[in-house]
Length: 129
Image 1 (cartoon, rainbow, N blue to C red):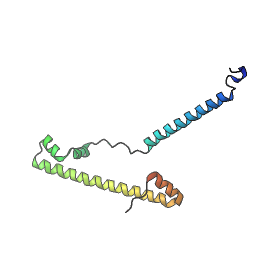
Image 2 (tube, one colour):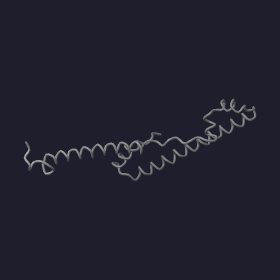
Image 3 (spheres, rainbow, N blue to C red):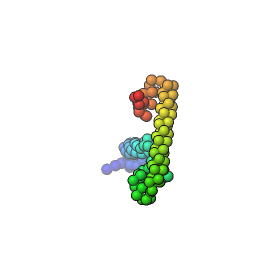
């Protein structure tokens, strides 16, 4: 049976158990929060909603031709516009990649070797050309 002075909050065993429970809760909470934030911060954004020519290109010329009952002249114009858009979009993507690579290289140029290693661990090694 417990003595009166051993019972309650002043008992070192009770305090030790509460401290262990608190530390375990803090560790679990920290781990869950970190994994949740990591999954939200490092995943690519959702793809944009496609409208206009982009949406038409995804539908496809044959589907548009059938759905809109295009004449041969209309089909020629629609084909040309979709091709022009695809080329334009590809040029934008190429420029974006070039700008991103240039910026990344400028960052790497100012980092120490140890920092470069950490940077590459976070964002991946530079592409091989």
